[in-house]
Structure formats: structure tokens, C-alpha cells
Length: 154
Ligand SMILES: [Zn+2]
Image (cartoon, rainbow, N blue to C red; front, side, top):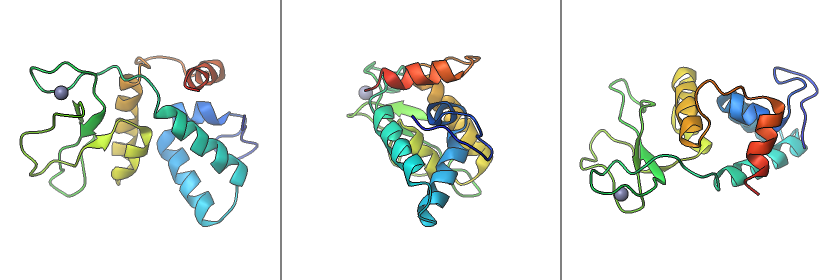
């Protein structure tokens, strides 16, 4: 277990920060990697990222006659460049009919937050992804909740 001793996440465990504020956590982890500091935090962070890839997905493929559990998402292009946090979900077989103005298929994972460049979009996509991973709107992400969520993904 990793608990932050100072800074914006002071007293929180990594699991809780991952669910509450992944965009800032990814930024912190990138920065720590560039500075080659906080190795212990980065190890725990990578472990949680691996576990998150095993989280059950509560969303179906957008193809009208499919209905399989989604594995991927695509994002529409924003007219000013970059992607909008307004995902469509796809199984391994299906994808958008058009590819123009649409992102490639990206994994349903918090890592995908990094495909977006502004903080607001990143926060919005994180919120959407949380719901897709079964964390319903309004859930209080307490330390206990976060710990249990990741414990189930071993
Ligand atoms: Zn499908």
C-alpha cells in the first residue's frame, strides 16, 4: 500500500487517488518519472494500472446488432484539435463506420486519459470511464471503497 505523506494527495492511499483524480495522478507520475523520484509510488501506480486492465466493463458495443461487452472506445475529434471526451464503445470486432475525425480504438482504461490534452476533458473522460467500470455516479470514493475496488482485480 502506498500513502501520500504530503502534497495535494496528503494522507490518501494511491487506490483512492486513482479513482478520485486519475488525471492529476498521471501527471504526477509522469513528472516523477522524468525527475527519477518517488520510485515506490511509481511501482504501486504501475501495479494499479495493470490491475485496472482486468476491471469488468459495464458497457456494450455501440454496433446496433452486437451487444457484446465493449473493450475499446473511440473519441470524436474536436474542431480545435485533439479529442472530445465523448466516447463510443466497441467490442474487438466492431468500430466506427467513418474513420475521418474519429480517434483510433483506444483501450477502456484510465491510461486513455493521456490521449486528451486539456485538464477539463481529462476529468470528464475519467468520470465516464469510472462509470463504465461500474462505479456509479455519486459513489463516495472512500479509502475503504477504493481499496476493495482494486483488491477485487488481483
Ligand atoms: Zn460489437
